[in-house]
Image 1 (cartoon, rainbow, N blue to C red):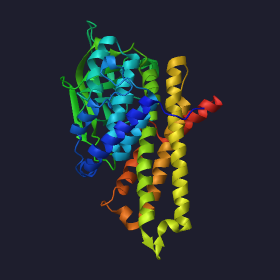
Image 2 (image 1 turned 180 degrees about the vertical axis):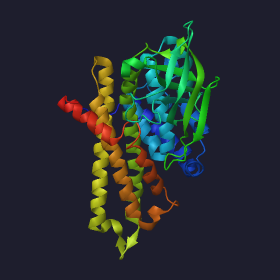
Image 3 (image 1 turned 30 degrees about the vertical axis):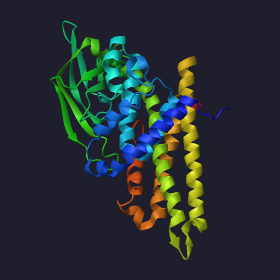
Length: 387
C-alpha cells in the first residue's frame, strides 16, 4: 500500500492551494454575503486547468487523474465551498458525463468550452417532486415527426450554476411506459428559445454558487444533442453521480480542514483562567476527535478516487466506495464545523470569523448528490445484495 502522491498530484495540489489562498480567501466572505457569482475567479480556475482536471488535453483539460482532482477540490473548498461547488459540477457532472457517453463532436464542442473556463456547465436531474426518487421525473422529450429534434417540456429544480450556465446536461422522459428505462439525456444550450431560468434560490450556505429552477417550454433540442442512446439516461445519471460523490466528499474534507485549522489556531491563542484553552482536557478531546475524523474522511475519499481510476482501467464499479466517502466526509464536515463553532464560543457565532460560514456550508454536503440516508441505503445494498 503506497500513500505517496505522484509528482503531478503534488503539483496540482500545490497550484490549487496557492490560487485558493491568494485569490479566493480574500473574496470569499464578500461573495458569501452578497451571493454574487464569482465569475472572474472561475475563469481563472479554468485557465489553471481546475475546471477540467480529468479532461484530456485534447479536449481542453489538464489531463490529470481522479486523485489529483480530489486533492485540488479539497484545497479550493478549504478556501470557499461555493467555488468548489461550481468546480465540482463542471468536473464531475458535466464534463465527466459527456466524456463517458458523448460523441466526439459533443466532446469537442461542449467539454472544451467548460473545461477551459470559457463556459459554465450545469446538471439537471432533480425536479420539484423527484429528489432522491430520481426516476419519478415528469420532464418530457418528444421526438418530432421528422426525427430532427426533440420538443422538451418540464421543470427542474435546485440546479447548481443554473442562473449562469451556458450548457446543461438534462435528463428527461422519452418513453413514459418504460419507467427508469425510458429516461434519456440531452445537452441543452441555454441561449435557445424555450429555456427559462427561475429565481435564484436564497440558500443557507454555498451562497455564491448560484442555484435556481429551470423550465422548458417547447424547447427544441436537435437530435444530435442527445447524449448517448435513448433509454440509458437513468443509468448514465447514476454513473455520473458516483463520480460526483467523490467530488462532494473532497469538498467536505476541504471544509472540515478549514474549520479544524481555525479551531487549532484558536485554542493556542485564546486564554482562559491564565492558560490557553487548548490546555483543558475538554478542548483536547474535541481537537483529537476532529483530527481523527478528518484524516479518516480524507483517506476514504482518496481511496474512492483511486478505486475510480482502477475501475476505469480494469472495469468494475466504485459505487460503494464513493458512497462511503461521501457519507463519512459530509458528516465529518458537519461534526468538525460544529465543534469549531463551539470552541470559538460567541465569536464562532459571529460573521466576523469564517467558522460560521464553514458551519453553514458544511450542511449541504449531507444533502446534495444523494442524502446521507440514500448513501446508507446504497452501501447496505452493496453489502447485502438486498433491495
